[in-house]
Length: 325
Ligand SMILES: [Fe+2]
Ligand SMILES: [Fe+2]
Image (cartoon, rainbow, N blue to C red):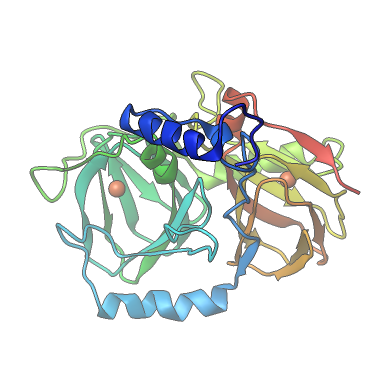
């Protein structure tokens, strides 16, 4: 106890005992700073699609989606995060459905954002709005919206789920509720606030790419709620990024965290002292404050889908970006 005091160490210890009994604490009675630094749990990590895909397919031999287990998902597990999620603030899972399978309807307080990866015939019904999911389509399931999934095609389908579950959990507001039936009726066409078709998003990305490139991201386009003009959710934003052939961005650091899925193209992203050589289907994560830069090493445009906790950090006035050349 490195404390300047007119009392003895023994008297201080007795005082601390009386503090504890009263439900109080004197942080100055222990060594170290008042606000100790906290290392980032999320580590830079790269997942290659050829490593994931066979394990994803095999998962169907162990579990069928049903009430209780609810979903056949594989979560990306960042080795630094005790809750086995992709990052401290975000969850990324890949959900796999065989032909004819249904993932039963339920709702929960965390928001989920689906980005369709592969297959024909997948759908998600959100509050009675049936959204057909073609590769590249994005479907938003806001917190407490009823949702079920199905595969009406003739071959397996899979998509990625992004959830703000970790944030809701930290705030101690996790809730979950099963729907009375396995599926909810489809009564309405999907609203533009929850359904973002790939054809429209990609066309908008190409239009944005006609503008001058951003030095740090080349071309970055955020999915926006059409009514409010805001990020999809206060906790998480989704973006499409285009890197022109041979493009090399400047390095920067952000206080936010980002998870990436490679939609098309080949490139290299450096994250602190690591180099990720990515190909279509790969995932990688950039932790807060990590120095990162992207390069397209191919002759075609590279496209990345990314989910980031930027909106939450901006709300909290914690978002910062700085060049790191
Ligand atoms: Fe769910
Ligand atoms: Fe960045």
